[in-house]
Length: 267
Image (cartoon, rainbow, N blue to C red; front, side, top):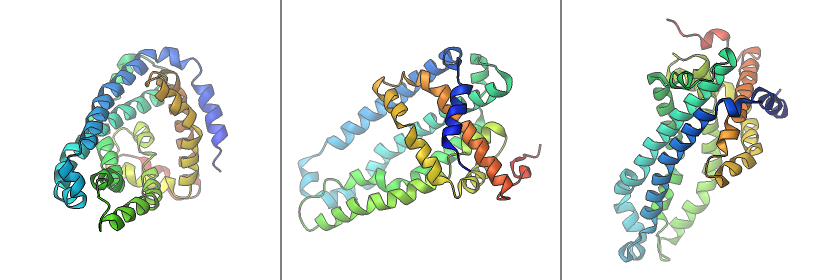
């Protein structure tokens, strides 16, 4: 049984007093997020807003002709920077997970959470996320279509994209347990972590989605405070999702979808 309120209540209890203890780690992480995202946001805003008259007049043909260039200069940097963000987020997950076992909140403990394997897993997860969400990254390439014979194509893209979005996001939700699997099993491979995550999430993706929605106000708070609200939010968020992971894993084992042995890594 998926009990969202229970996970959040336990997450709140687990995170009592942690915001102060993890202040240094949270502050460094927020600054890193800002350093990564702000230049990317400015670059992409300038990139998509710089429309030439030629592009407006020949929208569809221009979009197709410059698609490769747009992918290289808009999508690829975003992928690489989001891999870094994912890597940092994984480290925060490992940090809080390790605290629950050792009560160590030192910055040295945080530094030890970065590893080559977690970078591989973060890269694998982000790459597959981009593959499924590719239509949304490519859509701006076609937004300059003029009101001519290409209008039909424009509306097809515009209306099909949201429908595909639900399906794509459901697939991406299947990867949501990867960070917690690797936190518990640091040497597990990226491919195995993804397979386990997808199996664990079958039948409860809608519950995970609702869990994300229930934390929307916290996310808006972080946005309004330019990310610094995350200093207060991070321990609660991580503990809540760790509780959810443990419950989903337990359910998967009890229902024989997975076994404890599936999570073992041979030395």
